[in-house]
Every structure is written in C-alpha cells, then in structure tokens.
Length: 52
Image 1 (spheres, rainbow, N blue to C red):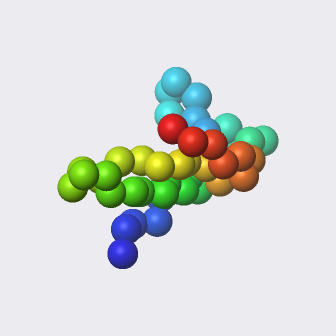
Image 2 (image 1 turned 90 degrees about the horizontal axis):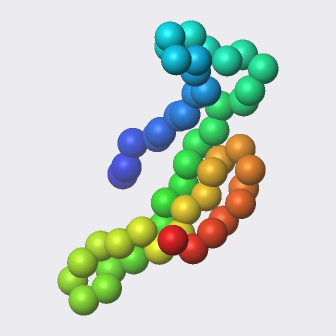
Image 3 (image 1 turned 180 degrees about the vertical axis):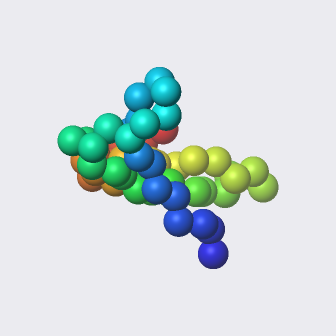
C-alpha cells in the first residue's frame, strides 16, 4: 500500500501557514504498454480531478 502523503502549506522559512488547510493528493496510476503513468491527479483540499 502506498504511503499516506500529507501536504502542509509553509512559508519560505519552513513555518506552517496556519490559516490554510493541509491537503492529501490522490494519484491514479495506469499501465500503458508495460509502463506505469499518472492517469489523473487530485488535490485533496479542492477535490478537483483532472487528467494529466
């Protein structure tokens, strides 16, 4: 099972931006001609699924 990835917005100095929510990206992998590729991706906070 792939690891659970959490993205947290931070400033350039690495401190957390507390008024912005963290997100959890989602990647859909597809296998084409023996090669794994990203078929779709979604940003966890927006739920905007888009083809890449």
